[in-house]
Length: 341
Image (cartoon, rainbow, N blue to C red; front, top):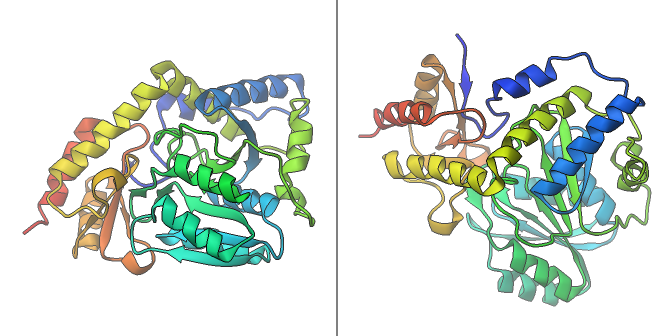
């Protein structure tokens, strides 16, 4: 059976993207590759106006790169944790040797004034780390502009995991560091770790060569990469960015709001997130029949996801990114609602 992905990522790729990646990879020191890289970087800057770096890897590597280049051993770090991926950010900062203080909430991110009060009590905080869109729960943090002001006020850097958010969930301010990846809302294959920079890396101790942003930036200044890049992923990303930019970012974001809104209004289960915290890329719902729903949809050719961590077996997660239609979503809704008493 051919399956269609409605997962939090990887996502269902458009035919143009699949065709683009099915090519012989270029030699990465050639003129032709530099032209490809330059095109992709220019398009990424149109999505978000900051300096983009692309490394071989996925979202986890992008987050690790961001933290290892801006957090140093012994630094005091505030980790905003309200789900699985917030915990992972905290673990990465701990592995770097930072003194991590978790500001942990049950489901929703704490208000920025609470973050500021907490950081001021700790004193000398060097970094605030936060998840933009908590993929494990479908909860989005729409306080990033205010969080950036908090970080600025206390002399800290703000590092954001936007792996399942950008470019669908808008970022309307200059965030210091954003980690993301190719295989979710960018609608390209897995394999590209993307870090957007609005400030210079600040490592005081060595960073593994594969994650050294200064080395990447040095090579990018001459449209080059320090190591072999994910060439075919870049083919796909180039094609997906063409689709996104030709549609227009505002229209692309609206399309996802409509898809997610349809699920929230049509599925007869309680959504995990409510109100302004509802994600427009991943919709999550409570159910005691998660495994049955997932299996029934699989038999119908649709792949959705279950819960992670404490929510395993207790929720379903439906991604609305990628090459899917409203007809796909209607079929998913009908099947899910069959399990609602």
